[in-house]
Amino acid sequence: MAQKKLLFENVRVRVSEVIYEPGVPRARHLRPTDQVIVFLDDCKYERTDSKTGEKTVRERKSGEVIWHDRSEDAPVLKNAGSKSYRSLLIELKED
Image 1 (cartoon, rainbow, N blue to C red):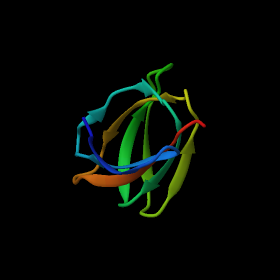
Image 2 (cartoon, rainbow, N blue to C red; image 1 turned 90 degrees about the vertical axis):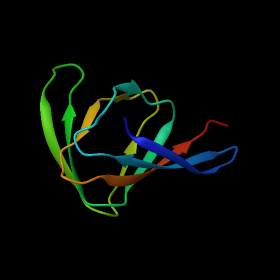
Image 3 (cartoon, rainbow, N blue to C red; image 1 turned 135 degrees about the vertical axis):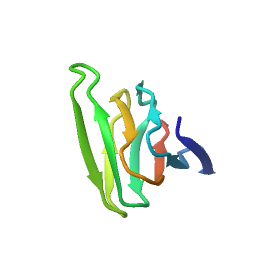
């Protein structure tokens, strides 16, 4: 399981630092909010598609930013690198 540390929260947003250890999977879940993810470290992870079971490896660079919609399926992820990596999870709350 990834380590998650709350950095900031108010009525509109929650910001957490998430640390992914090598070889440790993140469980599949539905995203509870719209989310912006900022990668703080270069990383490589294995993504398992929830519907087909297909595994793909993705690489991200430090500073790269991605978006995910609320209720989107968050598949199983596993850090495929040899060291941990960090990301910022910015969750946008509904009004």
